[in-house]
Amino acid sequence: NQNSWGSAVLLRGAEIVEISVPGFEGWVVGGEAQMGAETIFLFSVHLSRSEGTYLKTGHRLMDHLKPIIAGTPCILGGDWNFTACLRDPGDSLGHRRGEIEFIHRMSDDFGLVPAWRIAHPEGELPQTLRWMREPRTPYHCDGIFVPAALARVPMTARVHSGPLWLNLSDHNPLEVEWDGQLASDVASHCSIAP
Image 1 (cartoon, rainbow, N blue to C red):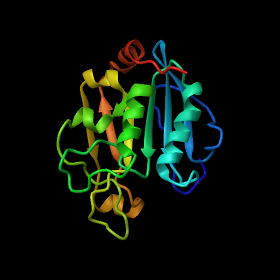
Image 2 (image 1 turned 120 degrees about the vertical axis):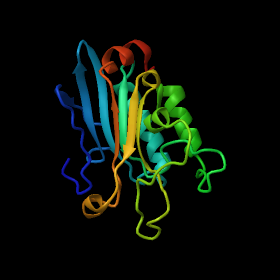
Image 3 (image 1 turned 90 degrees about the vertical axis):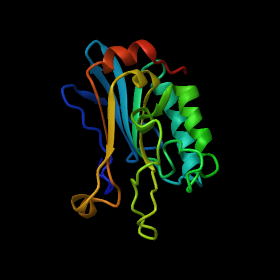
């Protein structure tokens, strides 16, 4: 991707065949990869407000991805520009209108869940966006959605912060790691209907 926000997919040990998502060129990058004998789709997302709101654009993206990834496991990660994970009840920030419905759609229609909640079932969400007007507010708009089957796979998730990241971005990166069971676990337990 040649845009200044740097959306990218880095895959070690496998090759990815790039797939363009119509209407999202430069905002969504990724494609199809072979992991062992299994196929998986990986996409990095940076949502815009092209549909008026980030949530409307998110739903349009999912409408476009559905026929592309039909029946194949998928991992979607990036800057969603809305809360990309369910907050604990009573969290002072709560959810904006439509965020919970979008997260439920990811689960119901695509079998995808926020990786942060698999690794951290409870607790406040860490800050991923240091918004200039409110740099201390723990906005969590960066997220990685993975097949629900990965809930059974040992996983760690952490948000990086500190001086190094202050110079690189206004976001704190989210990193998710899991053990080598990904290909067989995901392929046998996840499907996305067209």
